[in-house]
Image (cartoon, rainbow, N blue to C red; front, side, top):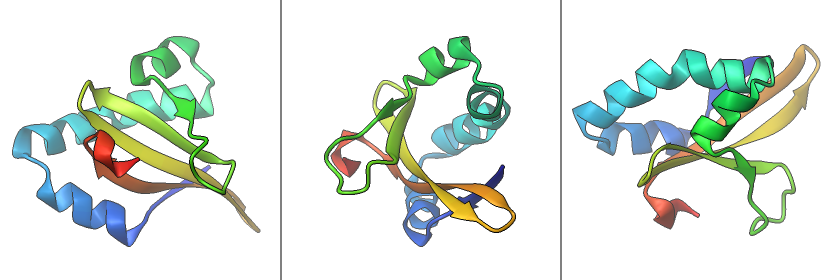
Length: 94
């Protein structure tokens, strides 16, 4: 699996506090474990769930902490699946 970031996600990351940027960076390996290894404990930790508000049925959300959430979706590509991070911030990103 490959990972990519939308322009919106990149802009959102720049608005995060240094503490939240560090949390995002430090959570990377555990998130990959939740997705790539289907680790149920890590999936619960991030509270991963599908969002039903979007027309695209493959939009998911997760939490880094109570008020810091992110969204992502999956894309098919010739080289395999891409997980694209869409945005990050408070619950208002939904």
